[in-house]
Every structure is written in structure tokens, then in C-alpha cells.
Amino acid sequence: MTGSIPNNSRPLRVLMVEDNAADMELCLRELKKAGYDVRSELVAGAEAFSKKLVTSVFDIVIADASLPSWSGLEALELMRRLGLTTPFLLLTGTMREEEAARTLDSGVDDYVLKSAMSRIGVAVRLALERAALRAENIALKQRPQAGSDAAGFAALNPYAVLELAANGTVLNFNPPAVELAKSVAREHAKDLLPPDASVIARTALASGHKRVGVELAVSGRMLSCSFFPIASSQTVHCYLRDVTDRQRLEAQLRHSQKLESVGRLAAGIAHDFNNVLTVIQGHTGLLRSDPAISPPMGESIQGIARAAERGSKLTSQLLAFSRRNVLQLDAVDLNEVLTNLSSLLHRTLGEDITYQFNYASDLPPIHADRGLVEQVFMNLAVNARDAMPRGGQLVVTTALSEIDATYVERHPGEAREGKFVCLSLSDTGCGMDHVTLGRIFEPFFTTKEFGKGTGLGLATVYGIVKQHQGWIEVRSQLGQGTTFKVFLPPASPKDARAAQTPRAPETLQGTETILVVEDEPPVRWIVKDVLGKYGYNVLEAGSGVEALAMWHQRHDDIKLLLTDMVMPVGLGGQELAEKFKSQKPDLKVIFISGYSLQVAGRGFTVMDNLNFLQKPFDGAKLALAVRQCLDG
Image (cartoon, rainbow, N blue to C red; front, side, top):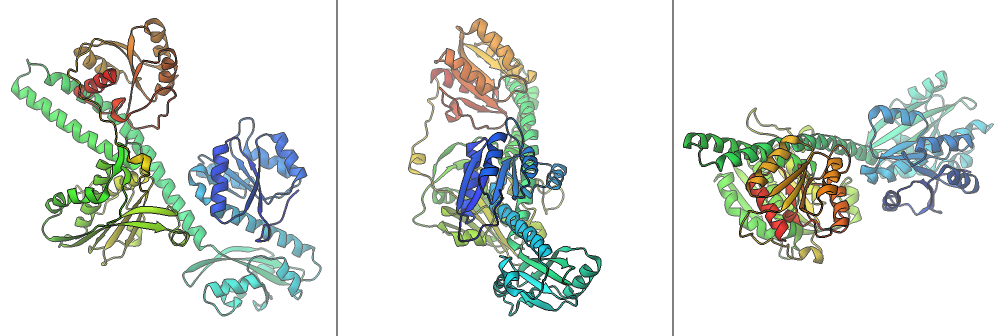
């Protein structure tokens, strides 16, 4: 059975078709944030779904697109076969444009990406509105008279509706239309209609075709008007909705998805390039240690090493944007970081720019990577300098901000309620137009002349802040300067504990047996050569399957597993480590990767640099990590 659209007098009845409890909890939490009093029931299989539909009443069905034994679209088909028209939303991890079009054509009211679950409240509201419109249209078709029954007209419509005569004259309107008019500073409901409403009404009645999605800007808000001809009474019903927030959220979602897609591409490029740099740095390290190398040749090798180091910094920026770099988290005093950087700021930005620092005295520490926080500040400061080529003023402010529901409503998107440490940089530079503002965080986008900028500065800031569970707000106008505000969550008491610092070993040499698992042969070979040079006995495997075979033969001898975290075939690094440590608890493990993955193993602990090594690395760094891990 199906229910009508919920109102303020009763809860929203939701049937969830989902096998993942975490996804369900996140969905329901976002619905509650959107103001719904949710009453939900959960099913996973087709039989339970059918039973719930025929025994209970629901306002909306929300289904996962991919389920273990069936799909969300199959759930929709089953519901339709039962003759139900309950609004239906689909949750999905990813969806291309052509897939989205096919999904909506199949009868799904809307789909929501799990990575953008904050949109679920808007999607539910729109689906319920469409259901109300469908119910009204059916009721109007079944009604023998229309146009003069004001009570019935208003009762059937919880949203703003106006009834028009064939010549466009307003015959009737309901209380929600009056409320909508007041909300946009209009004296009468008829003032909500577009200027050509009479033409639209005549055309709709003459053709018998509806006209939907006519947009009208009123007092800074965007209204959407849809006209439906009622042939029996020769009237037209105009449904109005304020779509301002929906359009803003959709624009933010598209922007976020675009940045996420570019981030995945950037991370993939950086990961592969880091493998190349690891080989270059490893071989240059071996060559530099050769006493037979002549001084001129040594200079050339040093030049190669410097170029590889610059390349690693570039990939580090790409990984920062894509939020796949390794964080060295600690409790960080933001005021202290800025004080330490102030002298560097003067040298970097020049003497024609004046500075003003306003520090909050009650600022709590943030749980952050100190080096990356410094990079965020310096990148924003350099961006401000570039906006002030003839000099100006830069004001740096720190504050503890209390973000409430009103603030979140005025800044839809990433802002959320709670206490946050805010870093603000305001300049008196040239400012930015609306188009530039929409692209500033895209990697490789720059307004500088060719050859004078990589376009990675603000993209890196965006990635670092997002990885620290924060967000950025930008306010700018041409000729009036720019203000960047970075919001970061404060550290909790458990975050304030001092990080472990591994003791420096007396020697990097060793004789232990190490199993190296790496699917890239050049990387595997240079790792083997470097460790062999330091005296270790190295066994190598190019996949998880090969590693299992080697472990079966030599597990008694192997003291350390050094493995890539992700391999294309067979077991990954984490699975290998868990399997081997279950058989040999004292086995040491080092993970290597071109970028950081969230490793949460059972029976062992990832401890910052002690057993994680990010590519690219040179021979000395590899030997140090191995010796520290074995001695730890």
C-alpha cells in the first residue's frame, strides 16, 4: 500500500532496501538533519520487500542500486507490479550520465550518490512534491467540476498552486501560494507568475500539453512554475516551487563530483609516476655510493637526484589534492605555526605588502599534519601576493567559530554544525569574478601567464583541508580583494597525545631475511638491490600468489614482510600481512605505496613512518625504515 505525502502532523515513513547498515544509518542521519521525523524499516531481500509493501504504508522507498542477490531497479519493478506508485529513490556508489538517464527513464524519482549523501533530504522532498502533483492531477481528472470549488482546490495542494482562466486571469490560489509570495516580498500570489503566464495558459489549453520548468527570478530567489491544462473546466493550474536551494546544491554537487573525478585521475598519475621516481632515486643512490664514480659523473648523478626530488614534490601536490597522501597527525597549535612562518612570509611575499596578524587567545589545537598546515597557509599567502602585484595588505586571523544551523543554512554545501578553528586570510588585491571563483580549486587551472604557475597551489589547499575533515569558503569581488576562510575541527583530548618517535638505529646494516612483494618489476628489483647492498637476504615475489608460495617454503626464515599495499592480481598487502601474522605474530611488516590507503589491520598496528613508507624513496630512507622496523 502507498501513503500520501507526509506533513508536519506525522513522521516520514521510509522503507529502506539496503544490505549495508552503515549506509542506512548515514542516510537516516542526513534525513533527520533535513528536518524529517523518520520512521524507517529495513529489508534486504525481495521476499521481505514484497511483504512489507502489502502489509504496511510508506511515504517513500529508498533502495541501494546494488544488492547481493538483486538490484534496486528490480525492487522498483516489483513495486510497480504490485500497482504501487510510492516515490522511489536509488542510492548508488557511482553513476555515469548515460546510466543516470536510463535510471530516471525507468521510473526512479531520483538517485543519490553515496559520496554526496547530504543531498538525500533535497531528493526526498522533491520526490514527495512530485508525488503530490501526480495525486492532484489524478484528482482533478476525476473531479467533474473545477475552478470554483475553492475549498477542495486548497485542500488537495500542500504546495503553492494558482488556478488560471483561459485568458490568464487568476481565479483561485491556495494559502501556500500566499506564504510563498510573502517569502519573496510580493503582495499578492498573482505576482509570482511569469510575465507571459497568459500566453502560456492559452497555449496549454489549445494544445492540451503541459508546460513545466518555467523559471522566474524573484527577490534573489529562483521559482519554478509548471502549467497543467484542465480541459473539462478550461482552466490551467500553475504549480510553483522555490528551487533556489536545490539548484545551489546541485551546482555544488556537480562541482564536487568534477573535482573528485579529477582527483582520482591525478592520484592515478601520481601513483604511477611515484613508481618511476622510486626506481630513479634508488639507482641514483646506488651510483652515488660507488667510489669509482668520477667527480663529473657524480655531478650528473646529483642533477638526476635533484630532478627526481622536484618530481616527487609535484606528485605530493597531486596526492594532496586527491586526498591520498600520508598524514603525520599530531595536536598542532595553529597560532604557533603562523608565528613561526611570519619571518618566512616577509621574505617570500616582499616588502611592498603589509601584514596584520590577529590571533585568538583561546584557540584550541587542531589534529593535523603540521607540514601540510604550513603548506596551506603559504599557498594561500602566495596566492594573495599574486593578486597584489602593486602591493597591498594581507590580514591573517585565527578564531574559534561556533557554527550553528542558521550558518549552515546560509552556507549550504560543506559547512556543518559544531566548533571549528578558523584561519582567515584577507587581501586587498584584484579580486575574482564569478567564473573564476567556480574554478579556483581545479588542478592546473591558473589565471597567470603561461609558464608562471602550475595551477596546483589552491588545488593542493583544497585537498589538504578536505583530508583534514575541514572545508574552505571564499568571498571575492573584482577590485575589492579576496577572503579565504579555512575551517578545521579542533583536536580531541586523545588526539593531543604525543606521537611516537622511533629511535635512530646505530647501523643500517643487517642480515635478516626479508620478503619483498611488489608487482612493478623495476621497483621490486631496485628494492632488492638496495637491501642486498646493506647485507639483507632478500626474497622477492611479484604477486600475492607468489608471496604465499614463498612464505610456505621459507616462513621460518622471514623476519620482515615489505609489501605494496595494492596489487592488481590476488591478495593485497594488507591481506598478506594479516594472513602471515596470524601464523607468525612476531613478523615485522612495512607497507609501501604511491599513496596512502586507510589500513586498519587486525593483530598489528600501522605506526606512522615506522612501518609505512611512501613512494618515492631513496636507498637510505628504505634502509632506515627497514632497520627501525626490525629493531622496534
